[in-house]
Length: 282
Image (cartoon, rainbow, N blue to C red; front, side, top):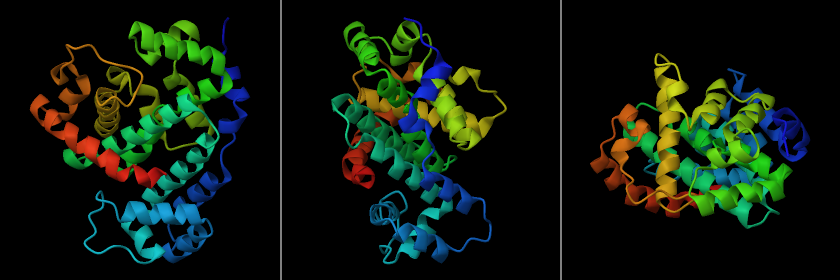
């Protein structure tokens, strides 16, 4: 059966309708005069979002010596851009609530990559942890759309990945004629997400297609690519690597100048961070 990528995206109504809360957050971001107290009033109307804002502000990633006691303090800590990331987390999480094992697996992988991306961004020092957070969370959003629209056929993709030890992109290309990266990019365009988020989603498996002079974008995409590989290596995916895997062969590690020794040291750190901080996304 031949699939049309445009029709697939158009038919996935649950995800392609841009959440109203995301639009409200964008409006806040576009207003340079917005006060943190005003933002806090909006956030406080959603108790779950407010709780998540406190969790992130008081997490190890922001290193506060004293925990934020008010919502305004928490928002000041993570910034408007960080809050926008949280709003995306909050709305996407709602999509997964009533789904099964495959969807839960995708969510856990997305959360792992988001936390690993923040950790690697902080370690690297030249990428925003907030940008890494949202790009890590959304990097595989195309899988969710493809699986949600064509669950039976996408189950064949997962079986192929598991049985033949191929990548999701390879299996998707063979069975659908396009990949989750392309679908995710179209969804990000439909949601009018920031251009760097769109690019990371599209190229997180294909770094060589990014212009060499787009240094910051290449770094951010490499961070997400590296975090994705790290989470697969940690067992947070159906996909597996062969026994001969080496960080020295990973292009993103070369771009970011992470040595194999350093990445091996970071592996247990990232595993612990995921275990400790995944509550942020609950």
